Image 1 (cartoon, helix red, strand yellow):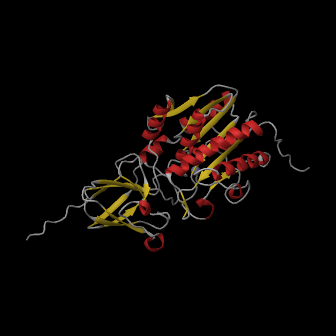
Image 2 (image 1 turned 90 degrees about the vertical axis):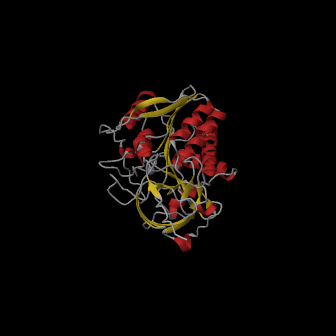
Length: 377
Ligand SMILES: [Zn+2]
């Protein structure tokens, strides 16, 4: 009997969020992620395998590219599971480290793998349709795309919600979806919500790291003394300057893994407003503890002036400095969580819902009642 040579599987990045360079040698695949215009090492990658039905491929990646549960796996770019939770597969972080193997089913012709669960802009569009929201155009991006925003509600309180100032940080969008869902279900009184879910839309669609993008990334666009480089951040600044920002929240993902990067935590930006962040954090901790949410613990917050949090301009500092602002901060949410507290899309959305409930309680019980801390003379 004659052996027919196996066809080489195809590994590519031709999809929303794709980022990879692959060298296929039989059933072994050697992979590097693309930094593009990020001038230092970063960890985001996402690729698609086609034509590997019935085979087992072993993928080798660089150090610090895989989390506790192996890669995120999807067949449709919509539903994602960790490899460790995927039927018919096994992944042991201790043993496998920087490699993983995947057994493709006999009819499994296309599978996506990524550092973490991607959040496809089509998912946000579907969410809006289901909730009766019509996205508008915030601006045209630098690469000519229509950057969406949504707004709902009317009232004195202006709430600005953003995610993906750093393109690769999709945990922020899952949390944001939960926040919106809860605020639609039970509206905040006397409030207009204004939301930009993909601030660096080009980076999200093209699979850029986005973090540290030269000459600077979207998160560093909030220096009042400098004109913005990007149309989306210019539009967000103009919106806040014209209408105010009673509450401003920016949803991010932290560094790859380990220590605080395994948690959800608030990045404090103003010592004067720490008592308000304390009050909000206490409510958020209660709300996440009472729900099937990825947990938040106030003790994990990152204080002002400690390690990397040294006062660089960002969305939250910009909003916090506006005269009508009650409280504004960044929420960082882990890519993987802890081995006993895993991140999943469902638990991130539940965290977002808990966040919205905490905001509602803050507005009812704390707003206008917590004075700013004045420094000792
Ligand atoms: Zn970030």
